[in-house]
Length: 163
Ligand code: 4NP
Image (cartoon, rainbow, N blue to C red; front, side):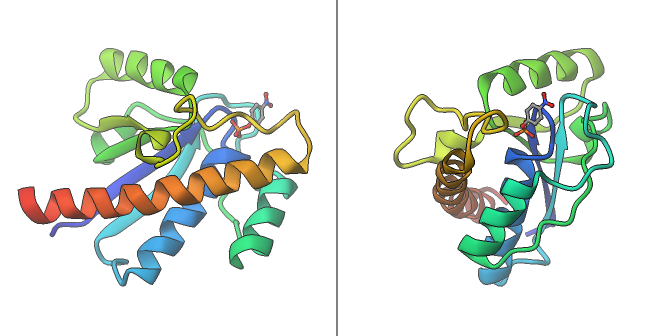
């Protein structure tokens, strides 16, 4: 299987998508698949470009999974739709923004919602925890973990079958 590139996207790239990036990368490593996946994250907005993830995201990642989230926020760019095979949105607003960008700039990336892979999908979106308390981050972490486990398995199976 060729190396596949996957980009996780939220609004600010400091709360949800850095968590998804870290969790997915961790699952890839556990599966012995690091040579098959390149993982990144970005935000549709530019407010936090260059910042580390929100301390609440860093804390839950460290506490729940021993992960250190060190990537710096960046904004989605037109080339992402060419450079990545999969672009994975946290909520429908992100997805709508990405669809509009892809219509405008082209590119073959497949757009998806992370919680399409959640066995307990709720309303299908990872809610924005930015303005809430730390329990929001715990809930978001669990959603991201459940969804990412299923997504990695599903995409690896697809790749194995379809090349
Ligand atoms: P995220 O959360 O999209 O999960 O990174 C947010 C972080 C910052 C803002 C909004 C959402 N903000 O408006 O600054």
